[in-house]
Image 1 (cartoon, rainbow, N blue to C red):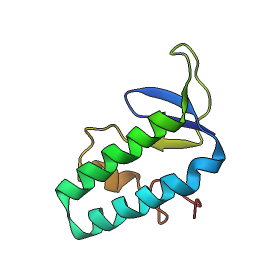
Image 2: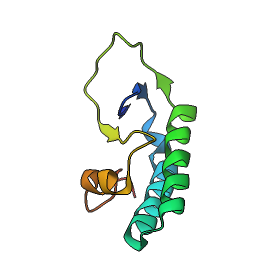
Image 3: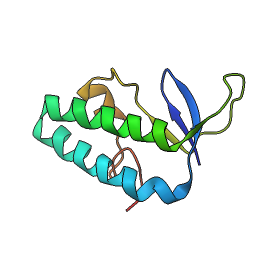
Image 4: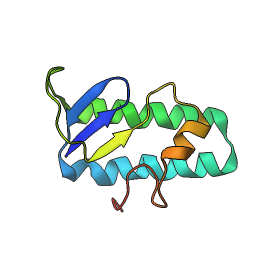
Length: 94
């Protein structure tokens, strides 16, 4: 799967990692619903760091269709809320 981190670029990520990422996505959703700003920021950074760690960056001059689009690290709680589906940022990965 190709994952885009807004403002950074794309990485190729094996689908086998989606369960691990979904755990962080679930945490993020709970923190957003409760208005836990510091928790939201911590978990968003953990999610993006995990994608960077597990994924293989694509060259900057490559543009592939993204199966998943994640917000930038500096995105606000409201901006991320606008990106959410009913399943969170990572739909169908449960």
